[in-house]
Structures are given as structure tokens and as C-alpha cells.
Amino acid sequence: MDKKVIFSENAPKPIGPYSQAVRVGELMFLSGQIALDPKSGKLKNTTFAEECKVVLENLKAVLEAGSSSMTNLVKVNVFLKDLNNFVEFNDIYEKYVGESKPARACVEVSRLPKDVNIEIEAVALCKE
Image (cartoon, rainbow, N blue to C red; front, side):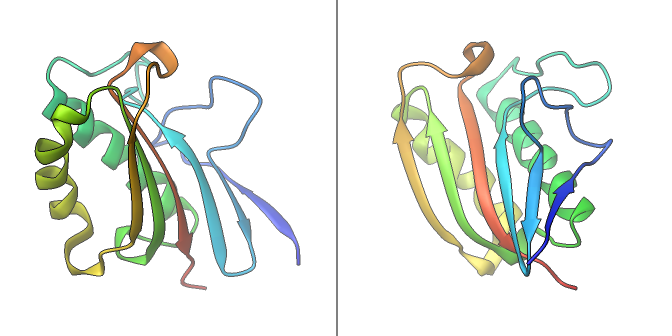
């Protein structure tokens, strides 16, 4: 199987030596997304809700660039700086994944890149 690097202009450019995603066969492995605005490169984290939505929109953009979608997510790993935000995150997350309900882990971590409050990485099926 060939490995294909996935890139979307509608998601932040990588800030290190990695790809936004890599597709192998019918699976796409998405790198962690944080609340960076793809156009300005600046953080959009005035509120936790805003931060979550930006992260999920970035994830969605990479999925679409790799011929997939939020409903094709298979496994999601969520990293939260504070698990007290778990309920608020779930309310926002559910609007993005709907009834597809991928497998998921959610853990509290001490620190994330650029001191954000949330990072999400995922694995998805591809349509083609």
C-alpha cells in the first residue's frame, strides 16, 4: 500500500516536522489539531467553546482534503488541559459527529502545544 500525505489550505500548516494527515489504503491518520486559525496562524481561544469549534473545523477540513468526513471518523483521541471542560466539550463534539459516534479516548494532560486547552487527533475511513 502507498502512503499519501494529505494537506488542506483550510487547516493550519504544521508547526513541526509532520503532516496534517497521512492516508494509507482506506485509512487516514490525522495529526493533532489545535485552535490555530488557518488563515492568520493565530490562536482562536477566547473561550473554551470557540477553541473546541476551531479545532473541530480544522479536523473537518483535513478530513475533507483526504476524501473523508466527520461521519467517517473511526477513532478519536481528545487531550484536555482540564477535565472540568469535559461536559462542555461533549456538547460541542456531538454536533460534529452526530450519530456516527466513533470510538474515543479523552484524557487530561498537563500541557499542550502553544498552551492550548484542547487537541484532537483521529483515524478515519476514506470514501474513495
